[in-house]
Image (cartoon, rainbow, N blue to C red):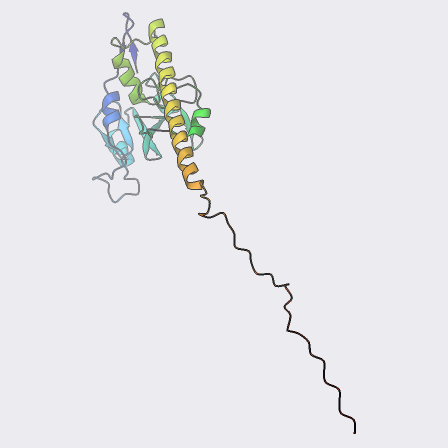
Length: 231
Protein backbone atom coordinates (compact mmCIF):
# COMPACT_ATOMS: atom_id res chain seq x y z
CA UNK A 1 0.00 0.00 0.00
CA UNK A 2 1.08 3.59 -0.52
CA UNK A 3 2.18 4.72 2.93
CA UNK A 4 1.61 8.27 4.15
CA UNK A 5 4.38 9.65 6.34
CA UNK A 6 4.17 12.52 8.79
CA UNK A 7 5.85 14.85 6.29
CA UNK A 8 3.04 14.15 3.79
CA UNK A 9 5.15 11.99 1.46
CA UNK A 10 4.14 8.66 -0.04
CA UNK A 11 6.24 5.53 -0.25
CA UNK A 12 5.76 3.13 -3.14
CA UNK A 13 5.56 -0.47 -1.90
CA UNK A 14 8.62 -2.52 -2.86
CA UNK A 15 6.60 -4.98 -4.93
CA UNK A 16 4.76 -2.47 -7.14
CA UNK A 17 7.43 -1.47 -9.66
CA UNK A 18 8.70 -5.05 -10.10
CA UNK A 19 5.08 -6.08 -10.67
CA UNK A 20 4.68 -3.50 -13.42
CA UNK A 21 7.82 -4.79 -15.18
CA UNK A 22 6.90 -8.47 -14.90
CA UNK A 23 5.91 -10.47 -17.97
CA UNK A 24 2.82 -12.65 -17.59
CA UNK A 25 0.93 -15.38 -19.46
CA UNK A 26 3.87 -17.48 -20.55
CA UNK A 27 3.91 -21.25 -19.86
CA UNK A 28 5.32 -22.40 -16.54
CA UNK A 29 8.37 -24.60 -17.02
CA UNK A 30 7.56 -26.71 -13.96
CA UNK A 31 3.95 -27.40 -14.89
CA UNK A 32 3.95 -27.20 -18.66
CA UNK A 33 1.79 -30.32 -19.03
CA UNK A 34 -0.90 -29.02 -16.71
CA UNK A 35 -4.06 -27.35 -17.99
CA UNK A 36 -3.41 -24.46 -15.56
CA UNK A 37 0.19 -23.77 -16.51
CA UNK A 38 -0.27 -20.12 -17.51
CA UNK A 39 1.81 -17.74 -15.38
CA UNK A 40 -0.75 -15.19 -14.24
CA UNK A 41 -0.03 -14.96 -10.48
CA UNK A 42 2.19 -12.61 -8.50
CA UNK A 43 3.21 -12.92 -4.85
CA UNK A 44 3.45 -9.60 -3.00
CA UNK A 45 5.58 -11.17 -0.26
CA UNK A 46 8.13 -13.10 -2.32
CA UNK A 47 8.25 -10.49 -5.10
CA UNK A 48 10.12 -12.85 -7.43
CA UNK A 49 8.20 -12.89 -10.71
CA UNK A 50 5.10 -14.51 -12.09
CA UNK A 51 4.00 -18.12 -11.59
CA UNK A 52 1.06 -20.38 -12.34
CA UNK A 53 -1.77 -21.53 -10.06
CA UNK A 54 0.01 -24.87 -9.47
CA UNK A 55 3.05 -23.03 -8.13
CA UNK A 56 0.79 -21.03 -5.85
CA UNK A 57 -0.58 -24.20 -4.29
CA UNK A 58 2.88 -25.63 -3.66
CA UNK A 59 5.00 -22.54 -2.89
CA UNK A 60 2.71 -19.61 -2.00
CA UNK A 61 -0.17 -21.24 -0.19
CA UNK A 62 -0.37 -18.77 2.72
CA UNK A 63 1.09 -15.74 0.92
CA UNK A 64 -0.60 -12.61 -0.33
CA UNK A 65 -1.07 -13.29 -4.04
CA UNK A 66 -2.92 -11.36 -6.74
CA UNK A 67 -4.08 -12.67 -10.10
CA UNK A 68 -3.33 -10.79 -13.31
CA UNK A 69 -5.83 -10.93 -16.15
CA UNK A 70 -5.70 -9.78 -19.74
CA UNK A 71 -7.87 -7.43 -21.76
CA UNK A 72 -7.09 -6.64 -25.41
CA UNK A 73 -3.53 -7.97 -24.97
CA UNK A 74 -2.91 -5.72 -21.95
CA UNK A 75 -2.47 -6.77 -18.31
CA UNK A 76 -5.19 -5.80 -15.84
CA UNK A 77 -5.97 -6.51 -12.20
CA UNK A 78 -9.34 -6.54 -10.51
CA UNK A 79 -10.15 -3.60 -8.29
CA UNK A 80 -11.54 -5.94 -5.63
CA UNK A 81 -8.05 -7.49 -5.27
CA UNK A 82 -5.70 -4.55 -5.66
CA UNK A 83 -7.59 -2.06 -3.49
CA UNK A 84 -6.91 -4.25 -0.46
CA UNK A 85 -3.17 -3.64 -0.72
CA UNK A 86 -2.85 -0.40 -2.70
CA UNK A 87 -4.28 3.10 -2.77
CA UNK A 88 -5.82 3.32 -6.25
CA UNK A 89 -7.27 6.78 -5.82
CA UNK A 90 -7.12 8.79 -9.07
CA UNK A 91 -6.67 5.78 -11.38
CA UNK A 92 -9.31 5.18 -14.08
CA UNK A 93 -11.11 1.85 -13.71
CA UNK A 94 -13.02 -0.04 -16.42
CA UNK A 95 -15.73 -2.70 -16.38
CA UNK A 96 -14.63 -5.75 -18.37
CA UNK A 97 -16.54 -9.05 -18.28
CA UNK A 98 -18.76 -7.68 -15.47
CA UNK A 99 -15.72 -6.96 -13.26
CA UNK A 100 -14.10 -3.60 -12.53
CA UNK A 101 -10.39 -3.63 -13.37
CA UNK A 102 -7.32 -1.39 -13.59
CA UNK A 103 -4.65 -1.46 -16.28
CA UNK A 104 -1.16 -2.09 -14.96
CA UNK A 105 0.73 0.03 -17.47
CA UNK A 106 0.28 2.73 -20.07
CA UNK A 107 -1.24 1.53 -23.34
CA UNK A 108 -0.08 2.71 -26.77
CA UNK A 109 -2.48 5.07 -28.51
CA UNK A 110 -2.76 6.55 -32.02
CA UNK A 111 -1.02 9.87 -32.65
CA UNK A 112 -4.12 11.39 -34.22
CA UNK A 113 -7.78 10.78 -33.47
CA UNK A 114 -10.79 11.01 -35.81
CA UNK A 115 -12.86 14.15 -35.66
CA UNK A 116 -15.80 12.28 -34.13
CA UNK A 117 -13.75 11.46 -31.04
CA UNK A 118 -12.97 15.12 -30.51
CA UNK A 119 -16.64 16.02 -30.39
CA UNK A 120 -17.13 13.43 -27.63
CA UNK A 121 -13.98 14.43 -25.82
CA UNK A 122 -14.73 15.43 -22.23
CA UNK A 123 -11.51 17.34 -21.40
CA UNK A 124 -10.28 14.61 -19.01
CA UNK A 125 -6.90 13.06 -19.77
CA UNK A 126 -4.14 11.14 -18.03
CA UNK A 127 -1.66 13.54 -16.45
CA UNK A 128 1.27 11.43 -17.69
CA UNK A 129 0.49 9.95 -21.12
CA UNK A 130 -2.45 12.13 -22.17
CA UNK A 131 -4.87 9.26 -22.81
CA UNK A 132 -8.52 10.35 -22.73
CA UNK A 133 -10.31 9.37 -19.52
CA UNK A 134 -13.97 8.72 -18.92
CA UNK A 135 -14.31 10.75 -15.76
CA UNK A 136 -12.45 13.09 -13.41
CA UNK A 137 -9.50 10.75 -12.85
CA UNK A 138 -5.84 11.69 -12.98
CA UNK A 139 -4.13 8.55 -14.33
CA UNK A 140 -5.06 5.81 -16.81
CA UNK A 141 -3.02 3.05 -15.12
CA UNK A 142 -1.03 2.14 -12.04
CA UNK A 143 2.21 2.67 -13.97
CA UNK A 144 1.23 6.24 -14.86
CA UNK A 145 0.41 6.93 -11.22
CA UNK A 146 3.90 5.83 -10.17
CA UNK A 147 5.46 8.06 -12.86
CA UNK A 148 3.24 10.95 -11.80
CA UNK A 149 4.25 10.60 -8.17
CA UNK A 150 7.92 10.63 -9.08
CA UNK A 151 7.45 13.78 -11.16
CA UNK A 152 5.90 15.54 -8.18
CA UNK A 153 9.20 15.31 -6.31
CA UNK A 154 7.94 14.50 -2.84
CA UNK A 155 5.18 12.23 -4.21
CA UNK A 156 2.56 13.96 -2.12
CA UNK A 157 -0.71 12.13 -1.63
CA UNK A 158 -2.87 15.24 -1.52
CA UNK A 159 -2.25 17.49 -4.49
CA UNK A 160 -1.58 21.12 -3.74
CA UNK A 161 -3.47 23.97 -5.45
CA UNK A 162 -0.55 24.62 -7.80
CA UNK A 163 -0.42 20.96 -8.80
CA UNK A 164 -4.17 20.86 -9.46
CA UNK A 165 -3.92 23.98 -11.61
CA UNK A 166 -1.02 22.45 -13.51
CA UNK A 167 -3.03 19.29 -14.17
CA UNK A 168 -5.96 21.27 -15.58
CA UNK A 169 -3.58 23.41 -17.65
CA UNK A 170 -1.98 20.28 -19.16
CA UNK A 171 -5.40 18.85 -19.96
CA UNK A 172 -6.52 22.01 -21.73
CA UNK A 173 -3.27 22.17 -23.70
CA UNK A 174 -3.57 18.54 -24.83
CA UNK A 175 -7.23 19.09 -25.75
CA UNK A 176 -6.36 22.06 -27.97
CA UNK A 177 -3.57 20.08 -29.62
CA UNK A 178 -5.85 17.13 -30.41
CA UNK A 179 -8.55 19.39 -31.80
CA UNK A 180 -6.02 21.22 -33.98
CA UNK A 181 -4.63 17.96 -35.38
CA UNK A 182 -8.11 16.58 -36.05
CA UNK A 183 -9.27 19.76 -37.80
CA UNK A 184 -6.15 19.77 -39.98
CA UNK A 185 -6.79 16.15 -40.91
CA UNK A 186 -10.40 16.96 -41.73
CA UNK A 187 -9.34 19.82 -44.04
CA UNK A 188 -6.88 17.56 -45.85
CA UNK A 189 -9.54 14.87 -46.36
CA UNK A 190 -12.02 17.47 -47.67
CA UNK A 191 -9.44 18.87 -50.10
CA UNK A 192 -8.55 15.42 -51.39
CA UNK A 193 -12.21 14.52 -51.80
CA UNK A 194 -12.88 17.76 -53.70
CA UNK A 195 -10.12 17.01 -56.21
CA UNK A 196 -11.45 13.51 -56.79
CA UNK A 197 -15.04 14.67 -57.27
CA UNK A 198 -14.19 17.53 -59.69
CA UNK A 199 -15.83 17.12 -63.15
CA UNK A 200 -14.06 18.64 -66.11
CA UNK A 201 -16.19 20.03 -69.07
CA UNK A 202 -15.75 18.59 -72.60
CA UNK A 203 -13.26 20.29 -74.93
CA UNK A 204 -16.00 21.50 -77.29
CA UNK A 205 -19.39 22.93 -76.42
CA UNK A 206 -20.87 22.32 -79.89
CA UNK A 207 -22.95 19.24 -80.21
CA UNK A 208 -23.49 17.44 -83.53
CA UNK A 209 -27.21 17.03 -84.12
CA UNK A 210 -28.35 13.50 -84.56
CA UNK A 211 -30.06 12.56 -87.87
CA UNK A 212 -33.81 12.57 -87.52
CA UNK A 213 -35.50 9.29 -88.27
CA UNK A 214 -38.82 11.07 -88.99
CA UNK A 215 -37.59 13.01 -92.08
CA UNK A 216 -39.52 11.97 -95.23
CA UNK A 217 -37.56 11.43 -98.42
CA UNK A 218 -39.08 11.89 -101.92
CA UNK A 219 -38.77 8.91 -104.23
CA UNK A 220 -38.69 11.11 -107.39
CA UNK A 221 -41.13 12.77 -109.85
CA UNK A 222 -44.19 10.58 -110.44
CA UNK A 223 -44.93 9.61 -114.10
CA UNK A 224 -48.47 8.99 -115.53
CA UNK A 225 -48.93 5.81 -117.45
CA UNK A 226 -49.51 6.41 -121.24
CA UNK A 227 -52.99 5.92 -122.78
CA UNK A 228 -53.54 2.69 -124.61
CA UNK A 229 -53.98 2.62 -128.47
CA UNK A 230 -57.52 2.02 -129.92
CA UNK A 231 -58.23 -1.23 -131.72
